[in-house]
Length: 89
Length: 170
Image 1 (cartoon, rainbow over the protein chains, first blue to last red):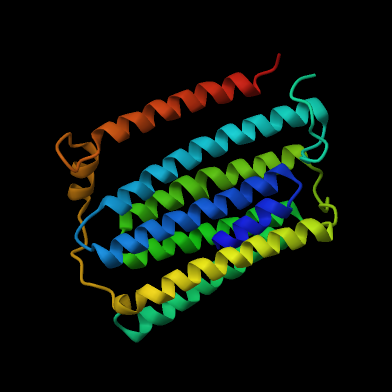
Image 2: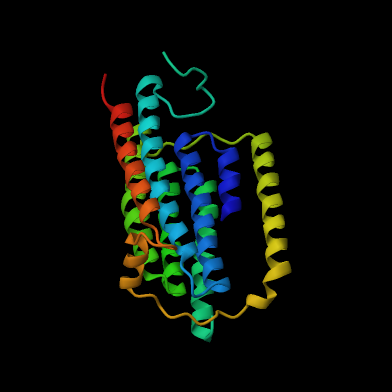
């Protein structure tokens, strides 16, 4: 799943698709935290809480990124990374 | 993974997750990619439930499936006409992405299988109660998480303000 995220992150041109790939990678890492916590230290809860905070931060990051993407779309009328070479009009 | 039934469930969940994540990055229609992402997130939540982390699974469904996917769908519908296909990939970037992904897969798979033979059996765990989760999240003692909790709340506030500031009309 993480590898799918890496593949999508490199190959996609649409910014929203890149963001989706990013979410896939974050989720794979979260699952790994929870699984290793469960298998190696079943009595502890550190991995679970790390996953919890990672989910919260991922939500914040996604909301902000989508705000930026919509703003860019409003200025340039497309969301492909190829045509984006200026930060400010 | 102690009984046969849970092994079958685990295999089904992981297969659904892997297939949906592959489809999410390979499909041409961006809205379908968001839908496959939703199924992958549900698979992750089911995995958390199977591991005994009920709170984590509930958070996963509420935050990801309830919030983030809706945001994605809104953004997709705002920025592209429905029925739009993304343009064809150039073979160079596809090749680069495949190499990076397969190298990553081989590396992680090797390090996982070289070490994880001992952990084939799920160790027993008392399912933690909601009391424990809440106390660990809100307590200020050692091994308790009040400070990160507050930090995350400040981060979310900053994110809300930033989002409004970025997306407002000039």
